[in-house]
Image 1 (cartoon, rainbow, N blue to C red):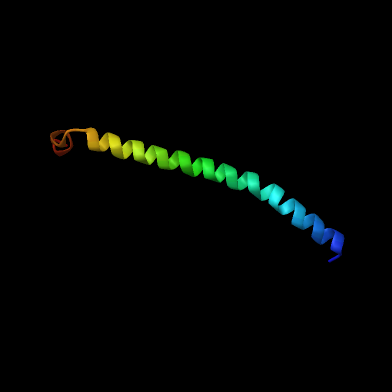
Image 2: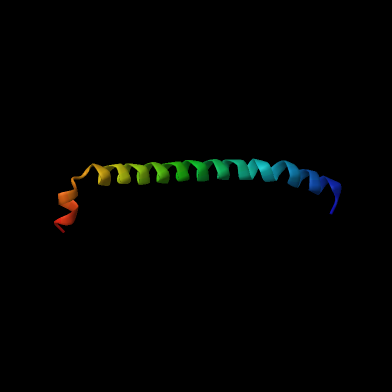
Length: 53
């Protein structure tokens, strides 16, 4: 490979991957928040309500 191409790759790969990683981070944070909210809601329900089913 020519050195210009290598330099272009070194510059462009982080520019492409950083936004992708940021979106993944946001999605993962949203999923974790939803799981925590669901667990808290399940914990808040009375025990009799879960045993009745």
